[in-house]
Length: 447
Ligand code: FES
Ligand SMILES: [Fe+2]
Image (cartoon, rainbow, N blue to C red; front, side):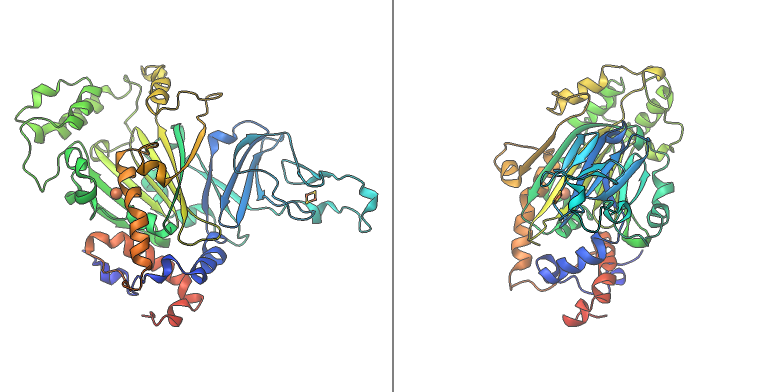
């Protein structure tokens, strides 16, 4: 087994969580050079659809033009720079700058400007096209890259492409769309979702449906990581209960299995779930044929460097995205998209299922089939006004405290366990960037 200390050869210092020079280096060399998950392809299916994605001081527009193609470009007018569109999902045939009404087509080209004769140098089309950004799609997600020299997305994702292939992520529907502003650096959020060491202490409910001590980690090139947690079981650190837990009962019932059959046989539940899914595959709305038996009962998580967490099962996924605050390194945003694979009526699935899921998430007010985005602060979670599920609420409730302590003069560096090897791998990838910018040497952290 690889040890965390073998992965992170450079200490994870507290400074990187609040220092503006680190934030500046991250902006120039990570956010502006890396493939970033920017949008859901389903929000850009029809011509005139737009999504505006903000990251730090940059904002990118992704648009489906009349020619049917997707375009990505900076959200900055080529006249005097004004931000053209607000953040979020929209639809417009043309983009008109709110300042002097320059008008752009959705392919980013300038369509016209008021009083064109007043420009001594004219309005050269090539020069005045909005600055383009690279764009590629994968698994129903649109990725952008501000670096024209970047390697193709598939090369950046590497092994993750084949790992995710058996899951039908691109077919999943958006059930809930939330953004919370948090009082911690964006990396503290990624650290939190890179280890299970905290689970037994913060998420006591998890012992009733997953076995975290039996989870396995996987480290990939480019700072990506994977995690596989056995599901439908109880935590192996505790005695197996006599009766199925409340979670197990729900999971069994969903597959039409009588939970009372498993009194005294709780350890047999995962095998029963696997059997039921195999037997029902193709007739209950789901096709499990591409998945292994293990995958049928495993909760997977893939962290895409730098800021994406994809956590899910064959039937659903959370996409969580940590984004830096543009000016304050001690603040960030967490976007969470809840995606569900709706049972396919062609495979015997219930066509009402999607509406039921919308209602269950509290977002039954979907407009044209799209749930609205809900933005709030972490105080709303602390006060109970908003929830991103019990588990995420528990994490978010703690992260401002993590930030406060890591920023104090009483903390110098993290002391990582082997259970935090994915934290180490994430920071190792960051260290390459910090090293190249001279930050490690400056802080006497060079290995
Ligand atoms: S800044 Fe956009 S039209 Fe002037
Ligand atoms: Fe957690």
